[in-house]
Length: 390
Image 1 (tube, rainbow, N blue to C red):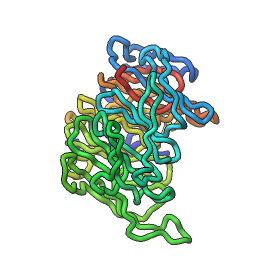
Image 2: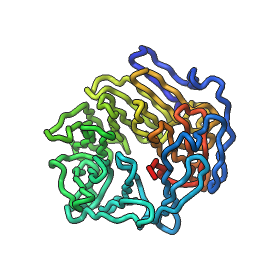
Image 3: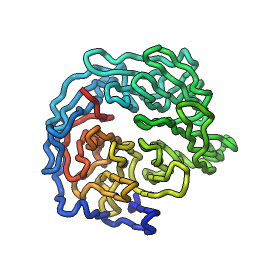
Image 4: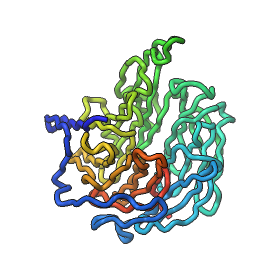
């Protein structure tokens, strides 16, 4: 892994971070390592308090080929059973009102699981619309999802199309015949962004990575229209290379955050204005891609590692583009961990999913961070944590 590189265009500087220190972090002390997976550990002063939190944390805990769902207190980690999924979830998304949750099954099977709590999550099949594999999804509102999937089980992501799933009407239909993957709608947003992959030159039998691909970041208004290409890049396919993975549009529609990945465990986060200009911010780090989207204050968050001298520790960055302010968790807060998931609460706190670094167990942790990033609560084990409204 390499040292993180942070570029902020509007400040006209390039910072090669050997220990990214932000003024807002001054005086923040290191914190001891995470607690045992099954028990919560209170963080230092600055960790979220129960009085300040209006939401709870929903997590999945895997056992015997399926996920059980638990709602955790963000202060104490006290668990409440919230149902059992038919299998193992690969990803999760919360409706804009925070009251409903959808899950994509691991392995891309053509269905979506919806719900949690006293009533067991129900299964919504997409096979009636001809879908044979699902890859990604996003909520439009409290009743509708846009799902990216393919009509052939072994088709590549370049074959994905978008489908509109109405959970109330119980219908699934092509979404304006749009072809693409990784859709995203910001809460309350009027636009959908997604990625379209076009194979310009197929791979040869001798080299599966010899294809030439054009990757386009697309935007379309939910009210109608064909949409437009924000930006695109053409490259020769190399392993899992992506240029605009996981696009996330800010609530005001002004900013776009994307992740570029390559053949190694590394990611470059890029933030640009929605017109597709040069990146306002670019952060390269050795880590898996993990983004939280946008909070009500206009901030975005993403995970990585602090620098080359701390490769066995995780960090979380928070960036507020309108203020040009970048902050990071202090050294020692997330030792021996790698962040895999991030999500904002309605109050501006974060929940992170993380796994142990360099251990055979790969134990998972659910960690709540205040918006100031100055402390933590380790709520114990779990995967795919999100905030829900009780």
